[in-house]
Length: 277
Image (cartoon, rainbow, N blue to C red):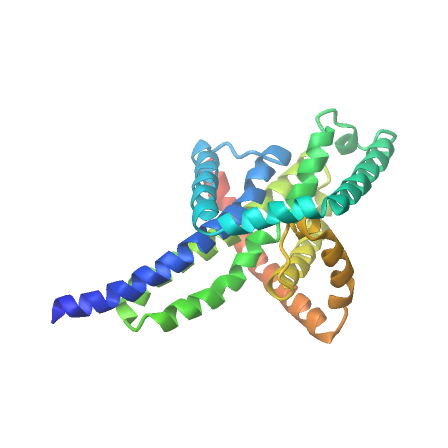
């Protein structure tokens, strides 16, 4: 009787974990990428444990996610890149021209942050990737819908409480705090160059960009690399889809949630970084 009951718990649990582990790993990888980039772009914490933990998590989540979840999606993406090569060329040409204009104007600026010799072309490319990929971190908050589906698939409250709930708490927590620490590193970078007066507007701007990115990902089903794999569809569909009452309400609500949660978590995260260093 007991064995039969345990089996009735394990079978659906195994199925749920098998279905979810790949998606969880891949989304964790995408969420941690901006944090890892922020170490090179903005500020690297003195805590080796924190840095190496980030790198190990990044590697493991990539290996598991690419194998169990995104293998087919990756092949499809590569095929789209080849088919849409003309679009890729146009995009990279536009980015290159924009970078040349930006860099030429920066060379004439008297601001110390812009004249820093370490701000190479690779730094600007890294900054572009950071901004594009950053929405994947707070996006994990919306994966709560998958938790609801997992709970529905498992009848045992004990299994949900002791297994499924902790998995999703850790998963969502990793994604969200990757976002928080990434922005804290941006703030430290601005402070280093005595530009901390721009910290609040920078954070709010990134909150808004992430809110827009979350809407694009959750409702329009585009992702960070759609700009490369589906350039024609992305650029033609996006402007019209962002205009309207529903998208504006969703984006503003998402922005408010991100801003409030960040305001709560930022002081706690800063203290943990300071104590860890």
